[in-house]
Image 1 (cartoon, rainbow over the protein chains, first blue to last red):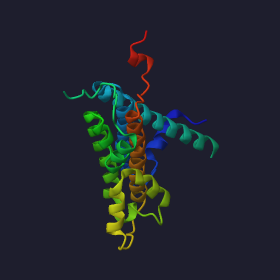
Image 2 (cartoon, rainbow over the protein chains, first blue to last red; image 1 turned 180 degrees about the vertical axis):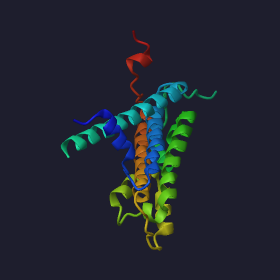
Image 3 (cartoon, helix red, strand yellow; image 1 turned 30 degrees about the horizontal axis):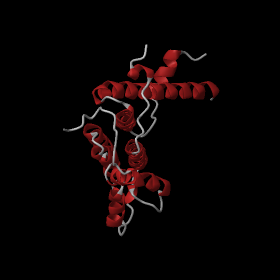
Image 4 (cartoon, helix red, strand yellow; image 1 turned 90 degrees about the horizontal axis):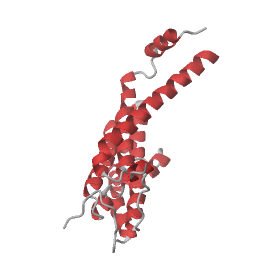
Length: 78
Length: 143
């Protein structure tokens, strides 16, 4: 049975792309999407920074979770 | 008296079609004309930065290409006339080879920026027509 330690060590060592730093390009894109969405929906602009930060964190954490879940599925069934 | 940005937009006399056109010409301009100055500025900076980041990654000739990247080009049309200007200005030259993943990053950034711009256009038209964003229970201060 696969241990969690093994899974995360494999995740850290996997060459997901030739240059994994390209994955960081996701962060500003998500920030832009969060900013536009909240700038449209937020009634008060004073509340914008916190709302954007919360949405940005939610999307990033959600995508990381989705990635880990897909990796788990891949490792279990391969 | 200037209108506060966070006040509801009662847009007496605003033509939704003209506001929509302004929002297409420049992202955020529709909100600016409706009196939502800060909102318009935030939208302008966020969308333009996203779009031009995409252009900077792979260059305009590759990114703005209706022949090989038709759907991405269609998505970018929300950015307004600047897309047409970029295409016309670079159409005569050869498409440079762009290595992956730069090619995908450029198209995704530019395409997402265009789609966000379309969202902003629709929001500006809605505000000009008198529609207000629906506030949540928490924002309304309900118990």
